[in-house]
Image (tube, rainbow, N blue to C red):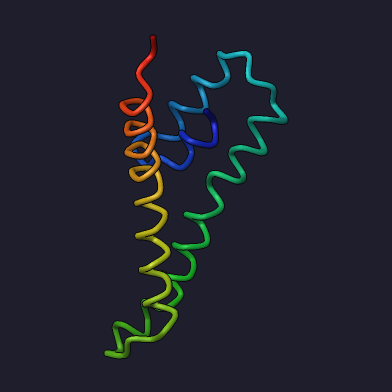
Length: 95
C-alpha cells in the first residue's frame, strides 16, 4: 500500500508520512516502498529538467523527449493499475 500511494501524485507526502507513522507499517517496509515509489518520478523529473535549457534555446533534445515520456509513464501507471484492478473486480464477482 505504501508503494502504491507513493506512486499516486494525489497524496501529499507530508500528510502521508504522518498517516503512515500512525499505522503498524514496519519502518524497513516503509523506507523501501518509499524509495521504490519515489524513484521513477525522480528519474523522470531529473531527465526532463536537465533538458529545459536546450528547450529555452529553441532546441528539442532527445533527453527532453525521453523526460517527457518518462513523466507521462509515471503519471499513467497508477491510473492504468486502478483501471485494471477495477476490471478484475467486475470480471470475478464475489459469491
